[in-house]
Length: 292
Image 1 (cartoon, helix red, strand yellow):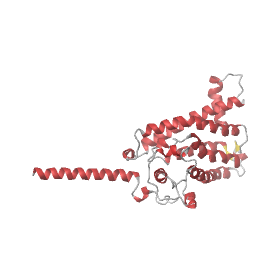
Image 2 (cartoon, helix red, strand yellow; image 1 turned 180 degrees about the vertical axis):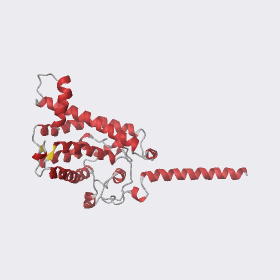
Image 3 (cartoon, rainbow, N blue to C red; image 1 turned 60 degrees about the vertical axis):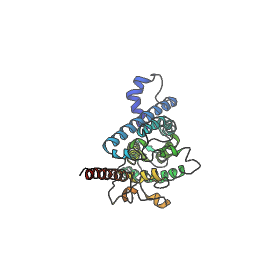
Image 4 (cartoon, rainbow, N blue to C red; image 1 turned 90 degrees about the vertical axis):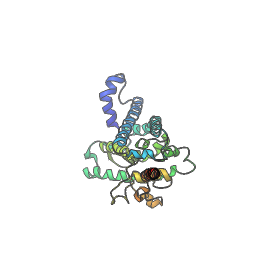
């Protein structure tokens, strides 16, 4: 995060916002700057990715599903807009410790334990590490002692749209992001790689709410996609995974997505339309026979 902070300082904050007498490495200035970066960056990533997904990917026929709430998209956006600054406050504490040099983030590939091999390998270990811990955090958030206080907010949306991707209670959102922050304190990670992975996890979070249930057949048993996560919203106690289905199989919480069995939310919408169309045809044919 110090790369982003230094860039924003150089091009914007130092020349236009802060007094030149206020050093860039002052802790209070860094805390304020990190909060602004986390909040503004969070909004930009959310609105850009969710909007593109909604108009370019999301099957808008799902908006006709009976469990879509009135003004749902507006409510999803309002929930996110309220939560992002509060999530940022919690996240800034972690970013601040990173910026002060207490993590294992490094600048140069030469500082990597195994050179480029580790840079590439760390992408896979990051995803595997975070997938495991998010599963258990997510599952824990479904425990009855905390569910209604934290995670229930996200389950307001039974059939989510991409705009539900970041519509969390702020503490819930932060807890599920913790593995992303913990990893670079335990394992060496290139700073640019970390930023790329951070954007990737936001992209993935949007993608599992995008209503696209078609996944290549060979990947269906392994990848936790939108079909899996939509069923999680509908049925609560299944498919807690983030990227893969591995931990759901291990934890006994895997459920084959209804969309793969022709019983998904979009199938419900299409079947309802077909029944309505058939009913209208019957009425039309009946009227025609009476006239004859």
